[in-house]
Structures are given as C-alpha cells and as structure tokens.
Image (cartoon, rainbow, N blue to C red):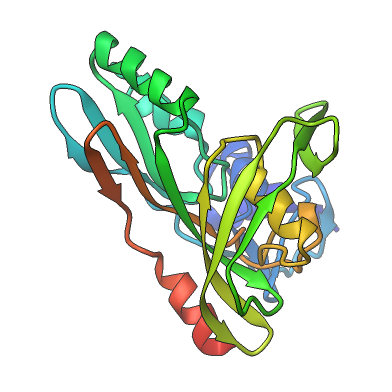
Amino acid sequence: MEKAYKLLATQEGISNRAAKDLIDRGVVYSGGKKVKVARGEISPKTNFRVDKINKPKIIFQDKKIIAVDKPCFVTTEEVARSYSDFTLLHRLDKETSGVLLFTKDEDFHAEAVKAFKRREVKKEYIAVVQGKCIEPVTVDKPIITIKKGNILFSKVADEGKDAISHIEPLMLEGKLSKVKVTIETGRTHQIRAHLKSIKLPILGDTQYGAKPFKRVMLHAWKIELLGYKFESKEPGEFVRVMNMG
C-alpha cells in the first residue's frame, strides 16, 4: 500500500505538496469515487483522474469595481491574491462558483459596504438540490455559525442572527430540483443551512446532509449593487446533472 498523495505525485509528475493540494481541493478521483484523504493508504496499482481547475476570469471592470468569475475548487483568498491591488468586497465558499467582487476606489468601497449593511444589494444564486421544490418558499430563520478548528458550520437556531432566503423552483427532474435563491442577508453558509432546514440539501453538500457529488452545486449567478449588475453563466455541470435527473 502507498499513501494516495505520493502515488498521485508519481503518476502526475508533480511534487508531493502539489499532489496533496489537489486531493484536498476535491478534484482527484479513483474508480469513479473522489479521493478524500491525501494520506490514506491506497493500492500502488491505482489509477487517478484529476479534474481540471479553471482559472478566474474578469467579467467586468472600470475605475471603481472589478467583477470576477470565480471557479469552484478555488478559494476566495486565492482569487484575492491574484487581484492583490484591489479590495475584496465579499466571499464565496471554495466549491461555490460565480460572481466575486473587488473594489478599486476607497470611497466606492465604503459606499458598497454601506449598501450591503442596508440590504440594498441583490444576490441571486442557482442551486441543484435533493428533493422536489414545486413552489416558491421564503425561509426566514435565524442562523448561528459554529467554528471548530478551521471548519465552519451554520445551523438554524433562535439565538442566531436574522437570515432571509427566497427560494424559487426553476426545474424539476426526477429526485432533483434546480432552484433560484435570492438572499436578503449574507450569513455564513446561509443558503446551505436554510435549504437543509427545509429538507432540500444542496447536491454534493455532504457537510449539510446531502449525497456526495463532484462539487457543492451552488453558483453565485447574479449580483446588483449601486447601479451595477453582473452575471456569471450557469456552469455546464448544472445543465448536465438535471438532464440526468
């Protein structure tokens, strides 16, 4: 037996560190299953498949703002390092793709922060969820976030901070639904926790009770603030998984 990351490093001709990073990101597969533990023991005859990680792309920029299309499996902090001359305005989880905003102007940044606090920013997401969503529903339930080590977990709790999510069905296929989620608040893991609370966990979101998939199927589709409107095209896997049902 051999440690997975060492075997992957040999197969791909990369360093042990780079191999471990690929496994930790969640893009390495063996026998159709995701390899989850980099230091796990595995057969020397194992063949790996490594999914491509896309690079962030600029959607729009001017003197005040820059909108970036963040791919999944790349952290917000990594994107921020690539645009270190600008100021990050908000965050997306590692496996959430879509619109990520940076500001170029201090005065504009201050106004944007105020807009977020006043709930004047409109954010729309697309998610593929387990279960049948057949009618719109608003989830108005407070959320509390718990941190254990480097892991964050949010849940609905009376002592939490107010959180509001509007869910609208877009497509139903078999036991999966594609929904649009518009959030009024921006609590940590808000959409993930709210959808779990109504028994519609996001496909791939094992942390919140869903079945494993290649990624957490959540995409930051649109965002509007201070007269700007940005959109990130729905990823191909969202279309493909719904066609599979």
